[in-house]
Length: 228
Image (cartoon, rainbow, N blue to C red; front, side, top):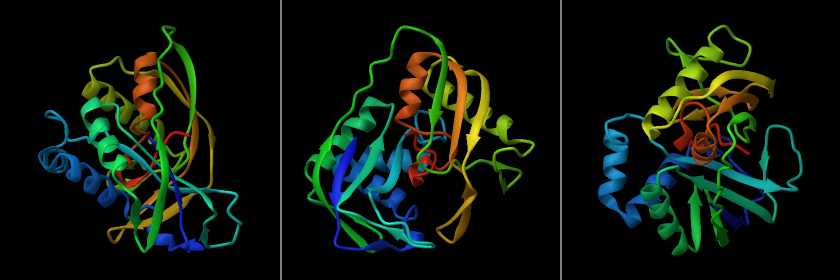
């Protein structure tokens, strides 16, 4: 779901890029279905601790580049998604009634939203995916970056776990083709460190379709790992 937004704020606080995401998502779910929101928050999805929902923080096309500042433009959007129809429907219902989204200190006025439905092709094979936000992975309590020893293992583990949650075949042959610079954000007082990536893997098209609405890596409900 792409929500088109505008704001009078010329820039977002850097800590507000990802920090409000989780609260915004659960706020939307609670508006439509408080029981679903509470269950997902407290227990995860159907016996799995993972939350099958993703979001990308506000993106602003044509925003001027300014070192150390997250600038805005009149052409903004926020993306939400879930591979679970029940969760996706709750988000759509709540967004349809919204005139604004409070994102940290910024008020984003909703101009409209579009539901994009990807129909998977029946062909299974190699696919490339690129993220719009940094991918967060951890090993023994430490954030990993592409190229580090356990990065591929942890990302493969994350993808297998997501495939298990969805009852779909796990992907194979994962490779990182390209990685962006290290990015560091504070979320609830703790650092989140990661980088945008372009990856290749062999995957069932149903899993590819699902993961596009969920994201790569950890903390997808916090806005990380959203697939472009």
